[in-house]
Length: 73
Image (cartoon, rainbow, N blue to C red; front, side):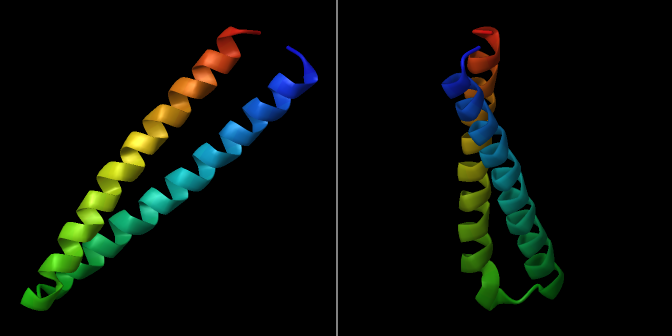
C-alpha cells in the first residue's frame, strides 16, 4: 500500500470514529426526549430518527470504503 492509500485509509477510520460518535449523540438525544414524553417533542424525535438513519447509512458506506481500501493492500 502506498503512502497516499495509507493516508486515505487513516482518514476513513477517523471519519468512521467521528460518525459513530455522532450517531451515539443522536441516540442519546432520542432516549432523553422519550423519557420526557412531551407531545411538543414528537417532531424533534422524528427528526432525530431520520438523522440516525442517515448516520447509520453513512457509517455503512464508510465501512465499505475501508474494506475496499484494505483489500487493495
